[in-house]
Length: 409
Image (cartoon, rainbow, N blue to C red; front, side):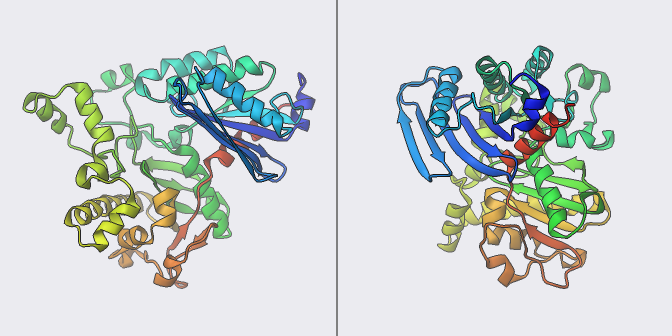
């Protein structure tokens, strides 16, 4: 498959999300955006590695257990499982491989076909994404070695947010120092915010450039964005995913002097503070649980620590909704997405409680209904629509990847 004509004739995209010790994947057919196979490799580099693979057509799931030394071994195992289902990486129907890359800085503003220069730039961004970009690079290099003739496309979490104006993206610190060390607000969860804002417009029967949307991506990691006419104008995460909302284990917004205080008075090292703020804070730090379902169960039993954690979570979330309402000036919809946003009705209700003056409210009956599809949960006569829109980051990556490959002439 060395010609552009053959690339355009193929309709399948393999989406890879490479973590430090994991590899998630989905194979999609872009004729109907249908899944052909999904899977996950866990504990790469350990003796207890596990690959769980599902062929959607048959509904069959297989599990492989045993050591996988590195991502090369993991991807070769994935290729073997796909081949067993007649979906191998050597298939002429495979158009491209799309890769999630967390940090693209300001250089990458759209999906990009990967070559050596792109790899070098992603590597240069490791200091601002030390936990993610190295693993993303490993996945890219591994896939390129297996299929050097196939387009490999990087889709960046930060790309959707590169439309933010400088007034939103800049921190108020010395600009020379900031520029030298690439210190600015980049934002993350970009593929989710792009997909959900566009799907929210579709749900309203409008084009993306006709609506202003506040997107609330609430999972273990959580972020908000203000999207004006399909373009992000502000988002809650910053230089790293630590800024912004209260999350499962991350603190979100914090007075920077807390760090100095913990160093000077608490005697904590930089690494210890990093671990505290990223892994032992948020809901977990407040009450010992980062699962919203468990927190709600504890609240129902009268647990005061769980109630306080929930209240702090909601307070921060409500502040961002109000702030982004002000940034946008007018709002057509607020969209909840990701694990908590899609499934936790009490969170949605509490987040908008008291905001009726802004035209924001949920209908209790609609809010209580559980469903898999996008739906409106605000009252029928509401000035601003409130929606639940399931995110689909893999489909967004596949869509962007296939659109880029299809541009070739």
